[in-house]
Image 1 (cartoon, one colour):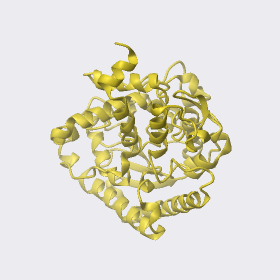
Image 2 (cartoon, rainbow, N blue to C red; image 1 turned 90 degrees about the horizontal axis):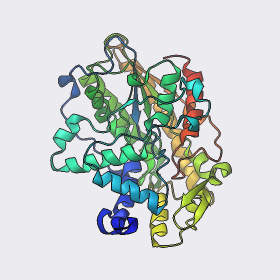
Image 3 (tube, rainbow, N blue to C red; image 1 turned 90 degrees about the vertical axis):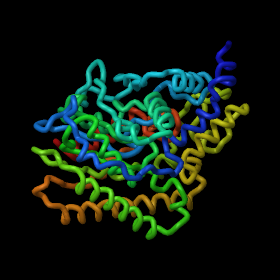
Image 4 (cartoon, rainbow, N blue to C red; image 1 turned 135 degrees about the vertical axis):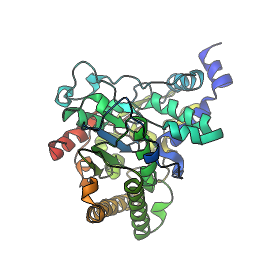
Length: 397
């Protein structure tokens, strides 16, 4: 059976394409429901220990290394192979190894010939146990994410390595498609790795919180809901979990990635990607939906631009909408600062909790080649630029 027949008859490639928005943006759905508090379940893990400094990476596709796999291309052959690998492999799938040559100045991040893998928990053992009949869906999402994300390209990983942490003391619980309402759920995934929480947690949420109908409402309503949700999530963490026993746990809240720049930066828009039946096409052409040459290409084009309908399908001509995104993101940044101030005033310092805000994600100017092959998420070069700014800002952990 030839490759196209395999995909058409067995693997349902269109279904895999339609899964991409769920993987990367969650389609607005959130699983924030209660699971048994992790503090009661903590067992000593085989990774970081209570005496050591270690780094947690929490959030969404802006920090997870989403869509950075070179295998992810908008072509029949590429997506067909990913679909086959997803459904045909019974065992867990490991993410492809990062190509150090794709990371500018890799040695400045403590990397030589290879990037040693971090530890990643996409879904905790507990989440899977409590998923019941939905467990196959979790397994499918976990395998798919492992195929299209390379977490060692993440700016969080690069920052940790540059500041002296070995790879096994960097743990990613970030999951593509999540909002701030998933903070407590993600924090509980650290229990799969160690009995104690990290000494530092990078918290990075980029665009999912405005991916639904939020931009159709008022800025005031958005920031009120955002603030209420974020504070609730951190209070759940502090009520039900314990900070790192020796060093305490500091949450470093990252500003959202600069979405208007991704949408309007002419250099980024000229980046070219391989596209089914059309050869190399610019991200600008993809955004304008002018590249599809056949039915499958049309499906790919629509899938890419509909991943986050409120944002990804916009072109520089949609100035009013982009200005609103900018206004909402600026309000989100101001709200994060308020949240950090309020939590720092509220927490009992003797319990080891601390919060700070960091805007290093807003500083880089991007060039063609900085985006992943989906024309939206940061690629290895963009992550390296963010990490460089964050390292300068932090100095040390």
